[in-house]
Each structure stands twice: as structure tokens, then as C-alpha cells.
Image (cartoon, rainbow over all chains, first blue to last red; front, side, top):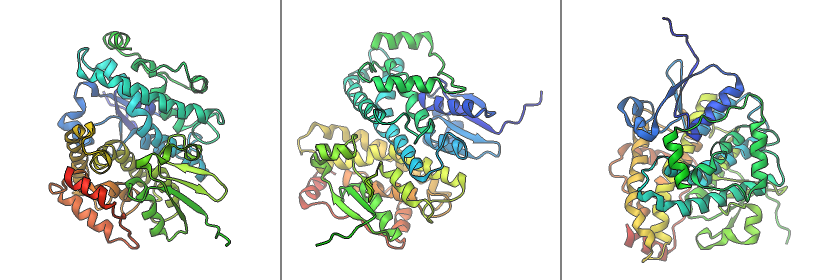
Length: 219
Length: 219
């Protein structure tokens, strides 16, 4: 068997929002890629082989056919989107797109993604469940900032759908997994629906029944 | 008195690393700007006037002479540096620069900056001091990732000094304020010295004697 040469390999966990961002954009670009599944919830980012790719022990990352590596989901989105309709060409719109992507990693993901992780992957009796009230409060604060923006704008990536929307969609779409309600945020819910209506949209795969049961019990 | 029209106003707290990033780059670019001091440690980002500029209640932000606003320190650096030697033109080097800037906001600043904040600004008897051992452990993990990179490269912004170096310098240079030792990281210390040697470098202003005394007591 001769393995087909592909330009790009993604190392990622399919049910991680940060990793799904990369899959969603690659699918929308119609790019060829290989997906290497990494179970980051069970230590697979801490093997010597993985640490040689990313000493920061995180997915996603991409490896080009010449072996060069790029880490950090939002930097990957930016690199993949350059020269495509998913990243504005106007300098100010690009800056606003990046601003929302830094907002996502600093003020959004650390609350929505961590609440979801604790609900789905922490042991049911884990002391980490005590973090949930604060994480949900902070998640609502981030969603309120998004709601306010969406009262005057349709997208987070300048004047059209793009990579800041993909970045913010990832964990907002699965907020309920962490017990975070979107009910108070009608603009956010409308925007999620607009994202899902984009050409070649793909949803994140379902978590395992075991993880689903833990999420349902914790939410 | 006629106020001189300046192209840019920075709203920031001078002794915040995230804010100092913007001042350092503006000084190195030789740009004209006005600095509007905001005491974010004492609630000044939560006034109605400030929230109208940034609903996310954070400094720094910049306001252009036509009133347009840009938030998030690293997005501001990217916008200011476009077309200058502080941001690479090569697409892959730009992506690596952004990757380190996302690393800074996700895996570095939340530990080094928060440890420094607790030591300098939390009340001496505050329960937040209990967070320090974990924050210092995570700070060392981030510094170890930087140390490994610097064994094979001089800079974080591609092949020359640039905005990822400015972003990472901000809180690394004041790590000791949060009780984080740089002693185990000789490459990081050498890189800090290279940053300080750059043309038109400006150091962060000193904190007040009261804050200094708290930091010295906590470290």
C-alpha cells in the first residue's frame, strides 16, 4: 500500500472545540488533510512523541508535509485562512478579527471549555466540580459581551463570516454540555444558527455515551 | 489652549504588563500617542464610560482619532506592527508569531500576571494567596516551554525581534514580582537582556512603594 501524500496532518481530539475549529475551517476550504486522533483527555499529549511536536502538550497542532509544526488553534485558523474569504483583507477588520480571537482564548474558552471538561471528563466525585458556579458566571459574562456586539453586527470577523466566528462558535455551540444556558442570549442563538447555515458546515462529532451521561448528570 | 490632535489614544494602566506592551511598541515605532491612565486594579474599567469603550472591562485599548476602538493587547500589537519590521512579512513566520502570542495569553499570562497581581494588589490577608503555589508551578511550566524554544532560536517573532517578543517580555521581565524565579531558565534570562538592548526600549514604570512592599512581603 502506498500512502497518499497529503499536504497537512492535524493532530487533534475530535470532540475538543479547539480542535474542531481546525476541522471546520479545513472542511469549508475543501482542503485535503489527514486527521490523527489524540485523546488529550487521557494523557496522550504528554507522551515523548507528542511533546516532541508540542512541548506545551496541547492539541490541536498541524504538521506540514516537510515536517514543520504550527500550534495554537487560532494561529492555525489565521494561517489556513490567509488569502481566503474567511479572513478579511482590510487591516482594521483583520485586527478586529484577531481581537475577538484573543477574547475567545482569554475571556471565553477558559470558562465555557473548562466547565464542559469538568462536566464530561472529570471523575463524578472530583473536587473540580466546586469550580462550576464561578465558571458558569464567567461564561455568562463572556456571552453577554458577545450578545452586545451582535446587537449591531452580524459577525465577529469584520463584515462577513470568518475565522473569529469559527473560533467563538466552537465552545458556544456546546455551552449546554457545561451547564451554561444560552437562553438569556437571543442574539447569540441567532448567530449560532447563521454559522450552522454556512456552506460545508460540519458539526462536532458526538461525545461517547459515557461522557454524555456524565454531562447530563452534572448540567 | 488648543489640544494637539494625536492619531491615537491608549487607555491603559502603566504598571500592567498587557498595557506596557502597547507603550513599548509605540515608543519603538516612534509613534505619537496620548496615554490615558486607567487604574484597572481599583475598578476604573467598570465605570459606564469605560464599559462604553470595552464591554469586556479590560485595558489596554486604543481609540483612533475618528473614535474607532480596538481591544486586546496582542491584537493592538498586530495592528500597530503591520508593515513595520516588528511583524514578519512571511506567512509562516507570521503564523509562528501569532502562535506565541496565543501561547502568551493562554498558557503564560494567566499564571505569571495573576501571581504578580495577587502579590501586589490583593489584600495581604486575602484568600487569593492560596492560589500562588499552583500559579507559580504553571508559570514555571510556561517558562520551560520558552526555554526549550530559545535553545534553538533567538526570538519568538520569526527570525528577528518583534511583537511576540514584546508580548512575552511584558510579564516575564517582572516574574519576580509574583515570586516566580527565573533562575532555572538561563536562555530566558539571555533573551530578556536581548530585548532590553533593542533600540528605543522603555522599561515598565515602577509600582508604588505600597504595592512594592506588598510584593516583597509575598514573594
